[in-house]
Amino acid sequence: MSTQPATRPDRNQLPVIQQIISVMWPSFLTASAATIIFFTVFDPSELGMIGGFPELTRLGGYTIGFFCFWLVTSISCAMTCYFRRPTNRRTPPEQTPEN
Image 1: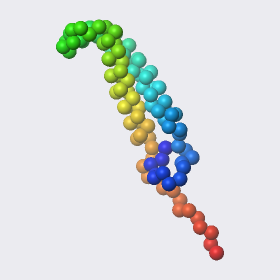
Image 2: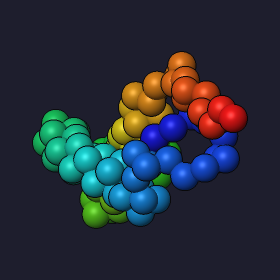
Image 3: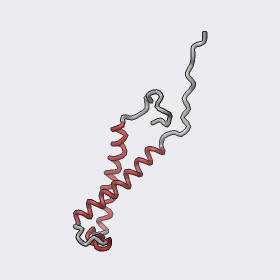
Image 4: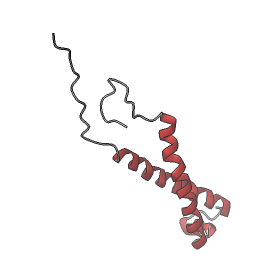
């Protein structure tokens, strides 16, 4: 992934769908593990009572928790992909034929 302006195609650039999947798939797996670990310790219906949502079911609590964990981990994965790009990539000047 290049930080240079899009003046010419970068041969190292991944397709957009591959970039999205490389962020979403690891974050999905991490969110799944975090949801299992978190709700092993905390009951979602009790958290609903504490949070002011007494009608929240366990399944609703699991769902909300999973999507919150997925949001946080996808932001983390996206930031990792963003910050792994080089910042001072210099392209050599184009060579002109001498007459």
